Length: 81
Image (cartoon, one colour):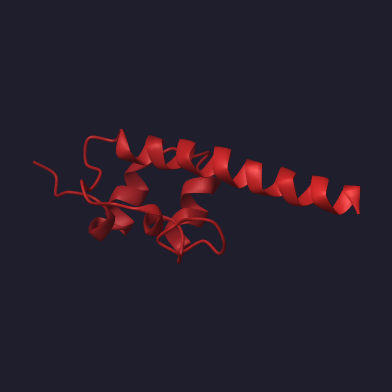
C-alpha cells in the first residue's frame, strides 16, 4: 500500500514539475502565442496526457523550437515580422 501511494505521489510530482518548464521554454520564444496554454503540446489544455504531434516534435528536438517547427506549425506561433 505504501508503495502504491509513493508511486502515485512521485508520478504526480514529476508531471507538475516537468511540464511547466517545457511550457515556459515555449513562452520565452519571441514568436510564442500570448494566449497559449498546455494544449500547444497536449490534447488536454491543462497539460499531461497524450501529446499532439507538435508536442512530440518539441520533445524530439530536446525542447527547442527549430526553424522546421516554425514552418511546419505556423498556427502555433505569431507571424514573422
